[in-house]
Image (cartoon, rainbow, N blue to C red):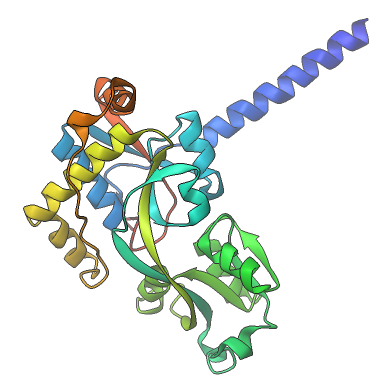
Length: 279
């Protein structure tokens, strides 16, 4: 009997430790230090709506779980609009153009410069990303990384030949003075669009979000943010009319909860120029 009690206590301790460890990983980014197009836009939206915003570091592969559990209110970090995601969450209309590209060492740019040339290469891509979906679709041999930054780091170290990442990220780092300046991008695998996600059924919060973005478009704030990060040619203007007055009380509940607490939580990772830390 005593052994059973001890085992039960140990099992409970392991479970609780795991829960607390998981919760400990979900820390907020420092509000003043984090920046980027999505970050600045979220801050402007919060100000327009009269609430605050907090940015939570999440495992991007768990974004749907985070939304369903209420850990975050929005998945807002250069999220590629995918048909399977539309089944799992509410998603805005596209707000930015992007593409998935192949990032390689500059010395290998000629070697991996076509679809035929890359087919037998060793790939790496962020877990749960559009890059992983494309690799799976095309049957590429590869492994996953926690983030797109880690995927590019694997290419730098020679662990992988090619990282499939967002064009916006690849362009930012390949043209800047950083540790990734020895990388470049070659083949474009597919073009895509970014959207912002909320919990399935949380149409009230999405309505408030889109209405605020429309106002920021009208007063020029959105253009200023895009210019700050050199994304003027990539942004897509929303065409949205508020549906708030026609929503049911149940549909409004998600936003009312945010308004009552005084802030919304954005789930994100780090990748420039959408979200990164000041150095």
